[in-house]
Image (tube, rainbow, N blue to C red):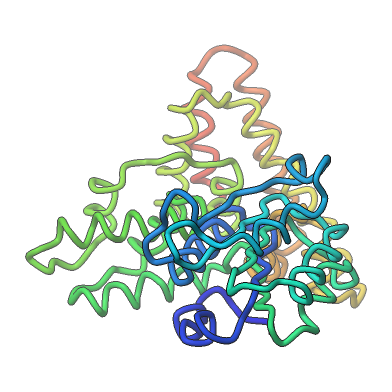
Length: 334
């Protein structure tokens, strides 16, 4: 049976009684770990020294039947056992199938893996088996993260301004686990139920670790406040102004090519996918919006402005960081 990560709580009775195994896979490493830990805590509420057995493929090299052997070995303390096979691959489908067919106890098999294609044997067989829960974990979309923040705030009795919400998402690197940890800290601090504003969230969270994508998207979306916060964070992390301006210029070149394709009738979603790297798929909606909001002439002017700024930086007459900041803010004006 397939399920989403947020559906785990609703499946607790079935996990305890119906499912014999679970496969958790995807590209969101933090999400996989969180879901796997939750499943473990549901199956084994109080883990003892012999109740949870962690294995990797290396442990199976000389003993390929070890998963089944562990499953059919009763817990010395009389409780249920969970065998967690980490770093599983498509080639471990037989292990899952043998476990389901030949286990003689109430042991539970938990497998975690990186991304598996739909045709991967382990995924295909697990999804087809009603006794196996399959959870795919992919990096959340921005809307999903906003929903997490709003749901938390509602239950805690206070709210976030839209700017504070976006800033928190940006500074937790679109990571659900980190975001939830930060929300819990904010909840403990905010006993007076204050509205969380941008200024307040910056004081509580700090600048965090910002990647270059954050700055590029702030510039392309003409968000001056986010440009300043992202740029200051990147410079404090040791990023070079010339490197940053070249990276932004390359992105605007890609947008320019994308606008050309848009005018030729190509699908905006397909264009966005070509501009972005596979790991950046969560930015697709934002890129589509940029393709429609930036005219070809505006993109040409922006590229010219960035090129002139790089020339000024290399002249050595003005502070490169100051030139970069002024240039990026200029680009926010339509």
